[in-house]
Amino acid sequence: MYHSRGVLWKSSLVPLARRIDPLRRHRCFSSTAVAHRGWDRLPASVRVVEVGARDGLQNEKTVVDTAKKIEFINRLSGTGLRTIEATAFVSPKWVPQMGDHKEVMAGIDRRQGVTYPVLVPNLKGYEAARAAGATEVNIFTAATESFCQKNINCSIDESFDRFRPIFEHAAADGIRVRGSCSVVLGCPYEGAMEPSQVVPVVRRLLEAGCYEVSLGDTLGVGTAGHADRLLQALSAEGLPFERLAMHCHDTYGQALANILTALQYGIAVIDSSTAGLGGCPYCKGALGNVATEDVLYMLHGLGIHTGVDLDGVIDAGAFMSEVLGRPSVSRAAKALLTKRGEGG
Ligand SMILES: CC(C)(COP(=O)([O-])OP(=O)([O-])OC[C@H]1O[C@@H](n2cnc3c(N)ncnc32)[C@H](O)[C@@H]1OP(=O)([O-])[O-])[C@@H](O)C(=O)NCCC(=O)NCCSC(=O)C[C@@](C)(O)CC(=O)[O-]
Image 1 (cartoon, protein in one colour):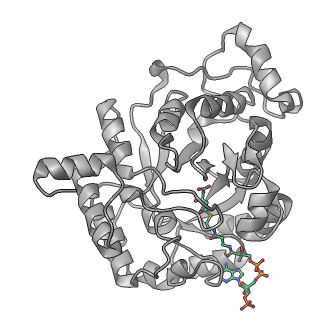
Image 2: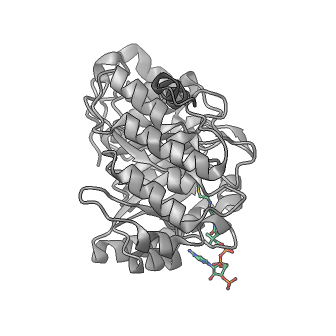
Image 3: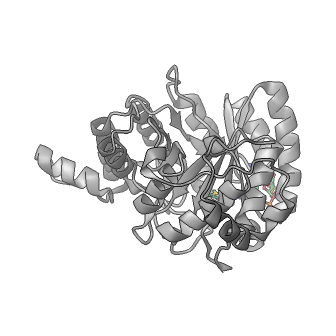
């Protein structure tokens, strides 16, 4: 059972929550206390999960030199970031860009206090990740059957069948398992998402044993009102917000607004990608993740502690932008580089 650390909602809003999410009637979570949203719920500190080296690069057409990926990760680990997703142990036939996962894991300097999670879709990926020295893995599924099929070639139920042995092995190996649920606000194949489609998958990931679940607006189509509706529904289910993270792509320029909405529910873990790198190979038209630089600029402006040096992240982003031969899409990086007299 999970216990919401939220405050009681205004009673007038509760019937609305029931209308939004009929599953509430059948929920197995005990809490009747649901979180309200507001400035008073902003977390004092946020852990930024850097996904640039994985989510950011996986969609690049030209395979990025392994040494450059390693240098990128090493530069990022010097900025105070505590979680840096390093690579994915997925099929190289499906995502060739991640085919050097073993070499990346072998080449990076493992800095004390920094975790380097890797994506794994099945036991084969888990075993390869463990052999490469991963201490945390990220399993991933989706809120829609269509996206799940396109992304990992199986149904949502089958994805959980694949995860079961991962949890068993991870428990024995002392490896932490994080979960990601894609297309929580919109799916390229099924359109806008109702919270009632998303809540059960998130709940299942938590119940299966993920220490944290990341809510992915994979397509980057969500707006703040939609994000709010999803968060209300998760809250009405009593899901533990201290175990949720927000993962927004910025296709429609809505990512920061959606993240701010999540922060107002007390969510204190935000995924982002330096220089706004990225896009999902199975999500046509989706642009990169929200830029880490932009997230840091907003968080620091709100007085939220991250422990991350924004200038250092800007430098790492400039390095990878040069490798890729195109400028960063981070507005904050561009502005601050211009201020430094380095263009942008
Ligand atoms: C899941 C599979 C493997 C199923 O793919 P499949 O073809 O159904 O799997 P299979 O079990 O039939 O195996 C086919 C071949 O793949 C191999 N194989 C099987 N598993 C692995 C593995 N782990 N590592 C390496 N090789 C593997 C296996 O050995 C075999 O090799 P063959 O006999 O043909 O030579 C495939 O669909 C896949 O790799 N998909 C990758 C999907 C992906 O990486 N998508 C992008 C990341 S998700 C994302 O970006 C969203 C997220 C997380 O950021 C959040 C958000 O924004 O929403």
